[in-house]
Length: 414
Image (cartoon, rainbow, N blue to C red; front, side, top):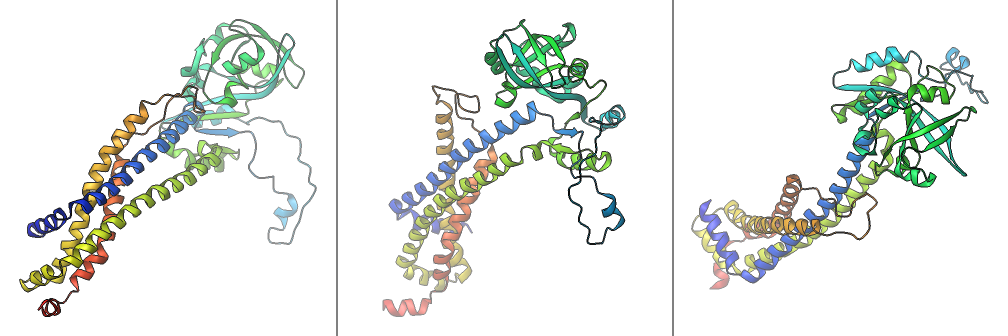
């Protein structure tokens, strides 16, 4: 094997210019693969972390996923039954036996649960009216299922307890209303209940839907505002392992009957976009590496053409077809390996260069720079792709070299 590697290195070194061009082609492909993948994964990871940090992992709602099965359908499950125009029966909205269910959920290892009541309200400050979603919370429990505490610009969740009718809103909503910390606003619910509330905190999550249209009050206060005493319409769960959210949500829904959504289900459209984005990214960067592989194919084909007499001599010395094929395959792997190593170095330089760039305005992600993922697996995937491309490019000329007949070559030379 050592002899084959020495022979392969010698053949490549005699065509230094072509070898250098092929290695540079692979290196640039690997470098662009690393840089583009780092940017894409960095943004995706940042977005998912923002969603996971701000939102709970599982939400149990006071509704069913499918309409109630009608009596005619139950009586004739296999019959040709069609029921139309069924009006939904009036039912008291809210999660039934919320306390018992909450205790069962809190008994799950690695899970934290919090009951909430959400409802619409109109905030009025002077001549300005803004409609928002008010969430009634238990500050101690809610802090365990949502990381809103870290996004607080002013105040804390516990200030809701120390202030009568305290209200925490997003900074964007505060700008829309023209209010500041300590101001008093009037909240009016669809039931006609009106309460005066004092702004005790401001937060900024970076998610526009929360920052400009969400408010937090004590659970009891919102139950009064919505005229729904002792009612909760959602239970939020946060898990130690976020990957278990989807299977656990399906299990909870089958047990309790209420609609249960994981963070993956709630953001399925965005996650699907990420899959398409990754497919496009890998296709484009993979095409660059395939083009670079043609350079390796070209140089090895040329070496095979020029070294036919050498191949005949090697075979006459006892080299088998497998040895000859391995000889030229090793040449492709050497070029691919050198390109992968050089590409990783160039890719690292590109990432560090991109990290130094600053934008004059904030990006949609709430950052003034590229969000980069520094993950060794990106380098490993790029290097593996380069090596596989180089090996495939070397297979065809290597097999052609192995099939050469030394007798015919020697006769032709004579």
